[in-house]
Image 1: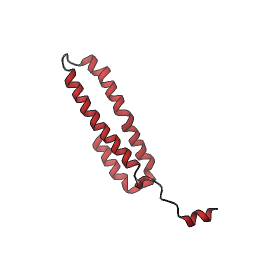
Image 2: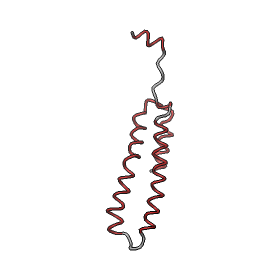
Image 3: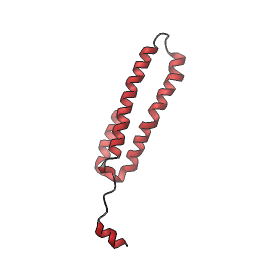
Length: 99
């Protein structure tokens, strides 16, 4: 999923502000879904089916996954807040004409 997200963001980069909502949606997906998965994985998969004595190994895997998730989520926030996905500044002359 991380590679698919990277591909999508690189693909929509030239579109700029016209796909801003899409990039925000992908960032929101990465902000919410992985923590929900980590919770589900621990309470419904590991606690029911995990082998006795493997909690430290499971915890290490979770910590590694959290670090990757945080990196992806922060990178998407940085991309979404970049100037490429903002509306271009309005020309002062056109603003004066609107009045």
